[in-house]
Length: 141
Length: 216
Figure 1 (cartoon, each protein chain N blue to C red):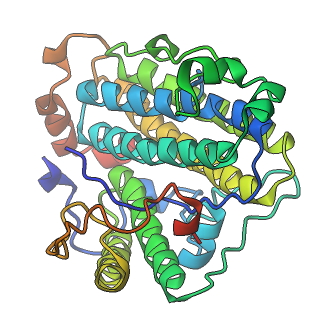
Figure 2: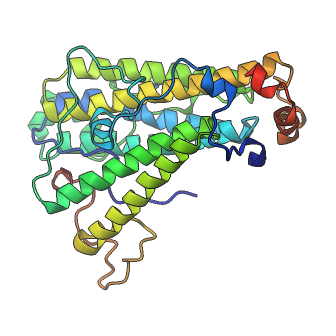
Figure 3: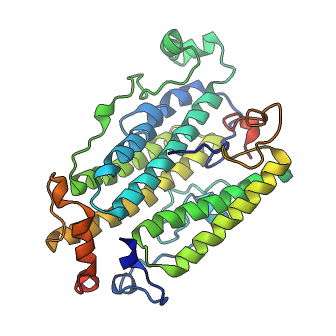
């Protein structure tokens, strides 16, 4: 049924055009820190500022970068669920998704497998169970 | 199906043990407004959404809530790590120790075990999505209460982040609610529990109607 939604002419539907809450996006870096990619939806609590994540080494930097790309793609996915005609958002979604996949592959080849269906699951002892599990503090940035 | 990624959606690295805080935070795991209730609510409601927009959104947000369960669980685990029996007694977690030792268990802040009675499925999309909007607002309010109860930046950071997710999800559910509400007003969505009136053929017919874009 999604055939009816397809819009290949790069114009927005009337409903989108007249909306006054047009989405405005943060960068993936700022959006990830904020927990919200959409500046028009961002709503801080009291005077609290979001945590400023600072990676201390290459592993943490890669983990942070792939988490940012993954989060940005996820946020755009939720938006696209409700706005399936938005071609520019779809392009951006795929940019972030590709970046996440590239960074994930780089991280896995250097520091250990993240995805349960990874191509890098090819070592004995079985490398799925190797490394630090994510709920241990030292895994995280 | 679901597939595990061996990382958190947002990093948790708590350096300071704090058992009182662990006792409060557990409510966002197993309390009435917590992440477990959220995940089960959306992942149960998604089957009877009237079209693919609702099915997609409830699947994707329900899946994200599973990652939030993991974040909250990680926070509780790290806050309790290395606690002595005396410290547990002092924080009122001796009752938790009696049944669970230091294992995770979904309860609210008073130790009441999780219950599926915390959420509803009615088969009515507007009723279900209104509940989802309310759930996101209540979870946001509870995150604010929890932020008020601590001054540890390692805890406040992830709590602020999770609070912001509630705001995004609330807005997405609101958009879905308004979309279905308009369809209902236009007589294009039958608001009852009869599945025959809610299958995709009705929506498809609606989408082909020339008035669709003007009505929206």
